[in-house]
Length: 289
Image 1 (tube, helix red, strand yellow):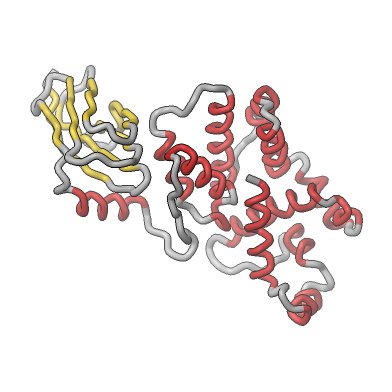
Image 2 (spheres, helix red, strand yellow):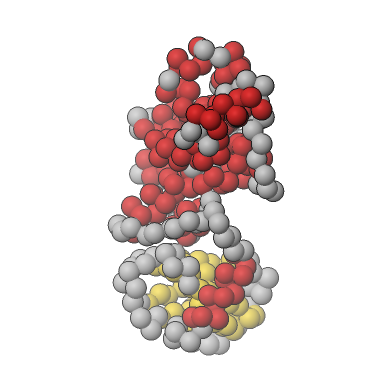
């Protein structure tokens, strides 16, 4: 994960600084009081525009930490970078680096120790924390829980420069799960709310023929799909407030699912989400216990 993340950050660094020409680099140094680009990132002095500038800077600082860990000679030449490393050796950024190293060496015990002390303070931290929990579960042989595949796909749809380069790792993990190569494309230029996307996809797929029976039901719910797809699906039965009552992960090729609803009556909703395409289909069902 770090190799891909660092490569992405280096590309982003060059784009932001105009480092492809010495003139631009010299101009940057003059405007920043002689600080190098890395020192600007370290001190937070880099001028970034937009509502997500704080998160973009934080992502760059994670990349800078990894870069300096790989080449300590850069730190030796700058007291600013040395202070940056000293401060982040005991921060979440340092913990991310340690967890990556422990996971790469299959040290699940060490990973658990560091992970248990990690406190997420922003959305990037939460993304890393969630990804590490998935990886730890896989390395311990426990596998993924119901709904995890959909959540991994969701993380992979984020923007790496704002939500963390862990997004690249989530994309790789998702592709390994589906044993394919889903093209996530550029998720940094246009961002669509999950609510709008869900509504759009429900409208698009409402006629595709999912069947739910018996309806009304005394608790047993059968769901069949009018077509097979080579995708994981998540089947959720929710109440009218959207709270999940029961859910099940459906493997590619399966066309029928049986689920049991206990201790609840009334109008519920059966929602099927295709993890890869994001398509959603929904039907109502009345439960009479």
